[in-house]
Length: 130
Image (cartoon, rainbow, N blue to C red):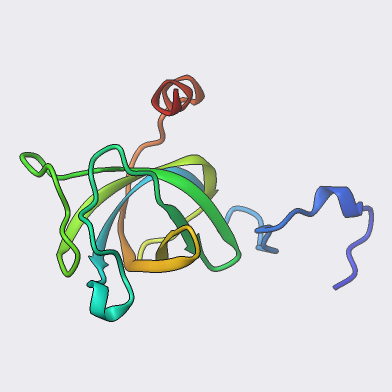
């Protein structure tokens, strides 16, 4: 696609061409996820609250933090539950959007966005990543 007055430097990986106002960027969302078992190609060990997976969706990938449900300390492989994700930066998200959860070179789970939550400030995100 040829776009007038758009320089190559303005387009980065993950950029999507949209009608103005039709998409919104977010850094926090709720999702229903499934973690694959070792037999399915997933992890052998459970996820802990300090785990930082890589989320892949459509044209972007981003490191994130997962907030477990109240009273949940571990997520076991083969488990299906709803968690809150906090992305390192704001990305285009839509309710119903599917994504994969990756650990190093392998996919360990998948999910679907069930709700878009209010964004955290840049300061709150930086504190979370320190």
